[in-house]
Image 1 (spheres, rainbow, N blue to C red):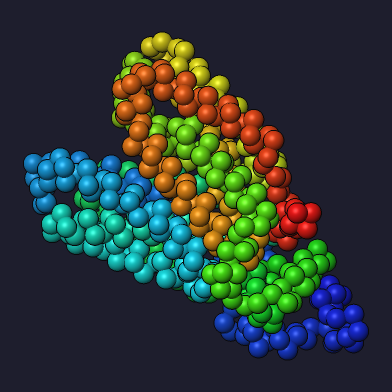
Image 2 (tube, rainbow, N blue to C red; image 1 turned 120 degrees about the horizontal axis):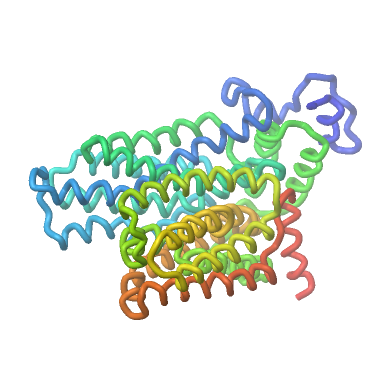
Length: 483
């Protein structure tokens, strides 16, 4: 319960108690009630703050899945834009090209302008990209539209997890961050459904609604308290923290720690000073962990299986209609993403990550060993279930948690950039790997990576569940003091 006593704990030790119900003057100046109304409980306000970013992430999933909707219709005899096979490959791949650089750009923007402003800035070209696709009359407009939406996928990648991590409490941060994977899976499924029943131009127009929802959604919530505190805006940080977290004793202590940490921190860093920060072990250790974590996720075949499900099912001789199985697997992916949100609330990151890696490894190695029949389908479903509870969601959960606040934007952006580059490499090399070592050899390769990843995660992955961001940061900062 938000009591006057809890509020008073935020005051300076020598400050006289203020009358019950009267807000601090800095709260009123920083965040007028009419600008940020106090909707419901703090937990509800944290969920509302995450809803906008989740709409943009859903659009990211739709961007990924849209080529499967777009290309068959463009290649049909009655297409309004006839395309060649070469043009089809460019339309499919041009969205992936800017994702890596876009994630670095997104990290820079959110450090300079703020997490909320970064979301709104990204949503403008995102809507424009979908509108261009919807209004396209030639392949060039499709190229530009796909490029813009792919760029925005990269830009939103680090921004949303960081904003959600910094605006949610330790008890709910994991489940809210786990909805990132749920939103991606939902977006892919929505793209497939829209393409099944609607013309691709109408499907693109509907897709433009999601970044627009994000733009409006984040308009009504305060900026990240951590970003405001890092810029020396203590009054705004205090007011924003109260809006998101209320006045609980634990929250009061977390706010004091946040303000004390940034009491002498400069509002902006030069590139030279940033270079000093990223050479510290407090940045390098979590950066290496996240780079390896993202690499394990991708090189265990997550997106290779997603992109080439039909080829894989035909290759292992499942006897099941491959396109029907693809839709079933897509639905299972969404359902397991919901399960992952529940598990993230109940279990630690390390347990889920290691269990997911071991389960994925066992499923992949089994796929390499079995012959034709229903066994490959069962093992493929098992693989989707295991990766969905750990390897897929947890890197996106932790990329917003593990970096020091001073370089959180840069660290999350660089890690996400690496993820997208590896994503491109895995999808690009998937057919070549299958051609060189066979479908069973590819499963053995991906399974070996997942198994090695489990060993690495057991040795180096930190536990962040139910810990404040400041506590996580202090753990890594101790290595700087010992160096």
